[in-house]
Image (cartoon, rainbow, N blue to C red):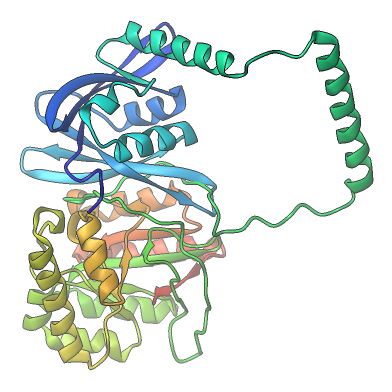
Length: 410
């Protein structure tokens, strides 16, 4: 069990003092404390743009961060609750925010929280802590080199850099390794639409694109959790089917010879097995969206695993093919969800572009969202509906005009 199990960070407000930014949070762990957390201004601004503090909205910060290797950006998310609806909202964050969050995540006692220099019950105490930390750092050095020796050392260093640069200026820069730490832009996800992920591992790597003339183009995901694709690719994903709209969505995708991925709810698949077979016969990807569309993170491990297994089994009994993709409803999942999904060799598929089509039910609004958003490298969230059918041709044509390859996920 993770040491951070049971920690809850509720974001109460975002405040500024002396040109510095602070999150006012309620930390629940063994007891509840209201604390101020100093963060960088960029992360604070990203949070401000997606927050609306009033008596109706509640915000819970995720204890996780991940990196989008393509965009070289750390991201995290928070779960926003409004009345009985929850949704996960992604935002870009700094390396400092990520490191501070890791410290909070790994802190094992209430007393240890008091030692973190960026947390305190009042703003002035944070500055006092930071001064204390600086003094400790200075004292731990023991002695200082005389100024003249420092000058000599600096001159030598500068000379070495200049000399090295002159000898290597013609060499190519090393290629960035997508398996190392890189980072992603702010993203909003409908969770309830969730997300609680967290989750999320580095951005998806392209393993292979083995489409043939008789099958839609696809990408095989190589990460246990995916929310984006390499630049130049885009995935259209459709949730909550099968439905009376499934066949028409498939026919549009076929007409344009592009990929698509369907995440079916088990109870719906049971009622409409012919629609499931139609998707399969046209070689589009099918993933599970759970059996009953429950909020996974609210369930015990056993109930989560049962919800996951049942959803897969219904689809597999119809298609006679193994299901390998899973999308948790509302993007709500936790470490137990990941353990259950990984145990059965499935991959969690999230998204980084949410059209909020379920909210507007308006084809023009759905298209305009995609038209005004950077789509390269994105996994786009859609739901089976008439509005999506009406918007889909324009969406595909717009993406193709950008020379993006629209792929199925595997």
